[in-house]
Length: 302
Image (tube, rainbow, N blue to C red):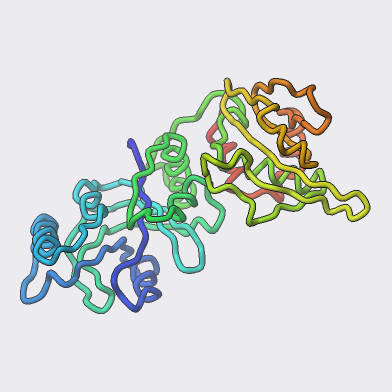
């Protein structure tokens, strides 16, 4: 399996709550897409006929054809999907068959993928969350990150209580392999719990290449007010040059850094390295209250 697919359950219906309930809470669970309009005075015996009818309709009416239609074309049994409900819960879904035509005008359903789906809750890896939150991300997107693919197999097995998928375990430590989003979440948790900071939520970087730090933090100690920023680099060979962040120090910030290698750390007392040993000690002490989106990764490392 080279990828898993993120799909939004959002058709051109005014009854989205009913759409999601129909897809995820019915006895026969489905992932659905729209274009029910092509069924006017006709029916389809297979997905191929529906597919070409949608393409024809879009062409004739100057409509943009959503990428999800092509994704469904290649769906096979046992492919894995992530979707999300209106309560913010994420669902892991396994296709039990190929996509099939199915019409429901009220819910604007034109085709469905029959699935077996399980509610994972709100705590999932950051890369999955980011896929749903990406501006102009479209109805569906392939997630090709191998760690997310293996995580998805593991989670489906766990919730379905089956051995449906074999998944690879990675070599190394948790911190060598934890995906960037989740490593950042762990380190931000560390700073809040152990160093008595709180995060300014509107400062959290949205993966912009123009923002050097992950977020801004403010001390909770009213008698010793401090402010800080943090930068996190995972992997095994990444290097951070502390002097790239000297402008923050000049403005009174402590700069917390986590990376396999940090250069020029000694150039200012305001540069603070977070070590793997410190982070491991924190993880073991506070594991019980850390999000599952972090702790579940333990099961994917030898």
